[in-house]
Length: 321
Image (cartoon, rainbow, N blue to C red):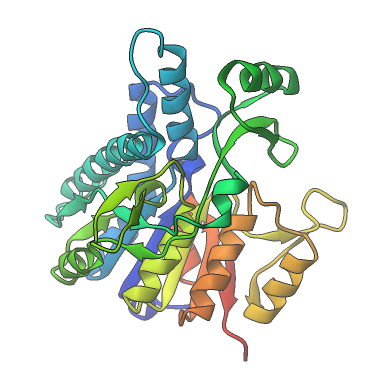
């Protein structure tokens, strides 16, 4: 266990899309504000520390609903491209989190500032992900509903870890987080920075440096790992809807993991323990983070943020001994 003085003072926290928009809400503004307040309360103990803190967040449920909403109204209002949908979700979620975290700080007597940055993230135009959509977005549907939606909207639909059917879109790997120097400058002056929301708006850049948005949703955990590596941050905290990572999940021999090495988690991954629609991307990000120079990746429940960071809970993935 680590004491408060031993908690890292430079940290990237990645909040899952389902943590900011749970499956059990319809998505009204009041519901989203309430969820943001709950998230802020969970993060408050970390926000009150004198630290350098970057917060990223997912957008899968929200961006999927934005895309669904505009497809249902396309006969009256021209639909936006997918990169602009990502921007809309990033701005909306960032606003709610920024306001909720600052309000929680003010209520506790803390005057710390929070900034939310619209973040472009460069990807490779030739990334194979554009030919093989895998990123789940939007709500769940039955198989029959999914078939009807696929036929009506020409969307790729796929079953998500036995929980239902969802829309899948391309998810290329992040190559460069634009304006990473601005994120660095703000966190060094004590500002809590919300950046890379939804993985960032996906863009490509030509030989002249001109950027163009592309139809994709980048995995926010991979973007989080990239931000942490570029900023030379040693620890990445991935917050989701479960207290620990488990192998043989849902089976009689299910086993929760407390602390594992990089080699051990890679072996479990090769054995197929982490489905691509749920824990897989988080494990991929943890591996990428550690291989990129990070020292510790922690995966735990949103409500256990501080206990996980102190080593009281969560799955801690560390470099090989």
